[in-house]
Image (cartoon, rainbow, N blue to C red; front, side, top):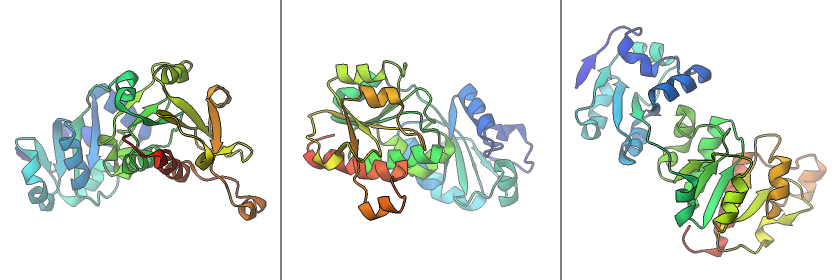
Length: 271
């Protein structure tokens, strides 16, 4: 159903307002049980993953490319100027969709069928979370588990950076950070804590168990001392000695995740 809107302040568009205001968006999206998908490819992937469409905000020229997947959804059609005024920036991909969230699975259900997991502790940057999801999905990891304070994978920036990979890999959020590693161990996972400390075992030399969970820590500080101490084994990605001598002693968390996820899969077999 097409509805043409000519006023950026129209109350029908409140799902889409002030997209750069992170705190506002977090509270609004939690209150309404929604998230935003940006661009044709991501919208298609969100729909394909079973998320119901609340509405779509788009311009005339994007109606036809999306026509086959929108069905009878409410579509607000606006000018480029209104689109930018509502969103707070120029929407280069031409369309935004307000999608309904679904209940997250339990950590137990995500662990059940996976042999390789990535576990994120307090990574708060949405772009980093989205990029890590993309790495994990692309390299065959079976699931992602988030600590309670980790950023929301369905926040617009995370979804956009992941190119919709957040819809293709199962994930769950821990109920309790303090006992989180105990739950992993009870499910048979060997926990590997990734650290920049070059004195620990290099990841490519670790004998991988049948079920492995890779722990990745927050930007800057890395894993908490508790998780480092409680993990079954700390591991590192070896750095170049010349780089270390020049003061380059680590990778950012996304680059580290990509290398480590590839390393997790060297034993082969299903994820």
